[in-house]
Length: 534
Image (cartoon, rainbow, N blue to C red; front, side, top):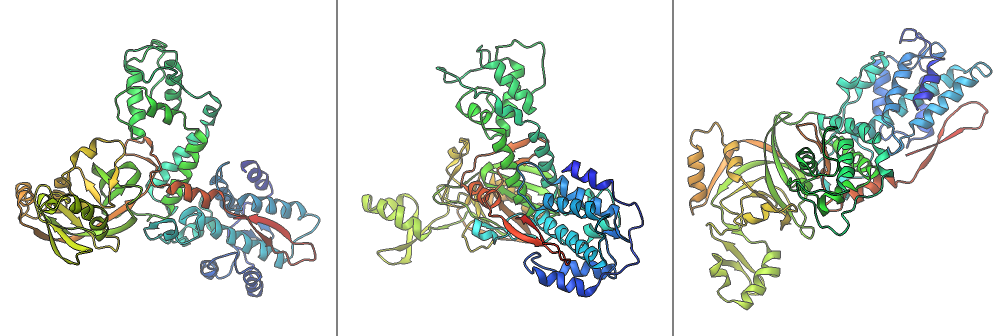
């Protein structure tokens, strides 16, 4: 791609960006009618030329301008061997052929207008996928109920047409995307690791610090290549020494493993994951980040399901995090966004009908006193399916506090009496709601500045057996997301398991999409040039 761009650069003319020639509006209308499916919305293209008073952006007289090269370079930088095809390589080849024929077959004004429009069209096709996402179907079909954010591309294309070289400050992408994209380049350079044999413990189940084994040098090599530990010429080659233990712990933290510095099944499973698979995971999560807003809310609660963690942000800065329990595979937590508007201290629990049917009724048949032992009462319904409510108290399933953000999925954040689950690496164990390991921290955060709710007052309300409802004076956005790769605040690339299989479904959309053949329309008598784009 870079070599093609350099070849094109040799025939580009460095002249003023604006041309005295105007686009023929009849050619514009004909171009848009020739393939109405080429652009999902022609409005931005028309508005772009209206702002330019219909002057071409990519031609100066009969030569392509340096602005066109900048645009083609922008599209070329996005491509890698595993990147879903957006047709950019086809467009570069097509432009090359046009330029090669220019001396023997001069282009008419109409042909230049069509190539001009094709370049602009391809920018919007590229930008729609690069900045808003490759997936074109409705996101709820992929169980993603966070609205896709529409990106304003007018500033970007206007700057391109004006000859701006460094576009990174105005690209409509959030910081999390940019961090992940930087790691993608690094992982392309690590593909040589896939040629190495898999790491195996043999008859041993694990290696603990201080032990020696012929596997140790191989693990040291992998961790050095991945950036988890520095090169150390003074280490004992086959000993699991303190330097290697520190590198192992860093690796374990990045992959959601207990950072104990022990080489076991979990560590080897992650080390043996092919780099090619890691690259695809990065690309999948870059796609998800394209769907997200460019600017993060001033205050945000983010729950990342595969990470089993909740994070509180102030602007782009991470304030603090805590462990959470999310829905099991059978009762998965929904991916959506809303805003916390209410806190309920010492809550009662209206047991969902599905839990009454599948869990309580069988337990009641075995033990008639089951409800009384659990602090539950029948408050209505029928004998076949009663409505059950659990009274406030230390054994309440919601714990001592819950945080409400009205939604149709009946999902909220809450405390839990079952603290043991937080010690597990895999914390997909709830009925769908999100259990917090330290709910008092979130309550203090949301009520900070309210003098009536000191840390002591919050503790008393949580320990009371009387339900207390507090309406917040501001709504705080909550985003329940699904990211299996991201770069943390320390600049470390993290990976997590695809707990609900959403990566597999998205991969089929990105890497298994059928190709579509379109015509790059030429108005002369020559046969139309065909191109394959996604």
